[in-house]
Image (cartoon, rainbow, N blue to C red; front, side, top):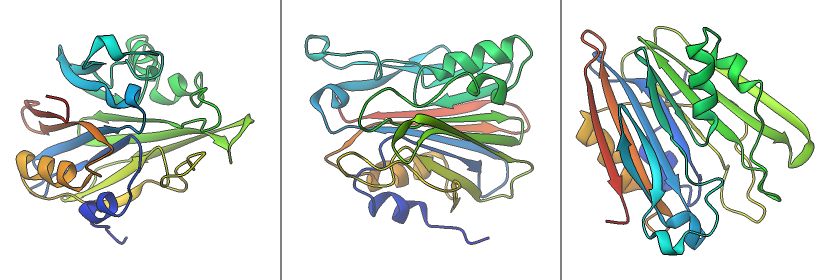
Length: 233
């Protein structure tokens, strides 16, 4: 398997939209998560990440400028019984509720579809970290046709140290914006949490990036280290 350079994947794409990276640290001791959001409109850029229990939520940086909260205010990260859920929308809550009922990540996402933001029909991307394993998913329209929904699930068991996968909502910038295609991109994971965080943040397009969350989960103790960076400070 060819591992792609995460910095290059980010820096060479002016608008990947929202993105999830999950993998294992280079020393094999931690599970690694990154979630970032970008924005082109004033409403999308008017956001910050804030902590919310073991997870995070988005909120308006300037409440007076918030025009439509429906697709931009949500909880990207929630934790249930050591399972970390990360998504780009309110499907975080759907997954959380299903897991709490003893159902699965896949069960939850089969009840959801892409976002209703015509003409983009933004995909819903989701991830789940449980122990040393992880899953990713993307729910998307069929080539921009909202009459057909496509649901893809990817499962990674016992990932190798220094390896992960990157999935994002958009293939590139455009109008309408083309959805991500294919399997999650295999990427190399390196550095400690601060080095990893800076790699992601510094390679996101400076005009479009909004917020970044990263977390390292110690595989032996379950202890977590978290970083949050917001363009609006």
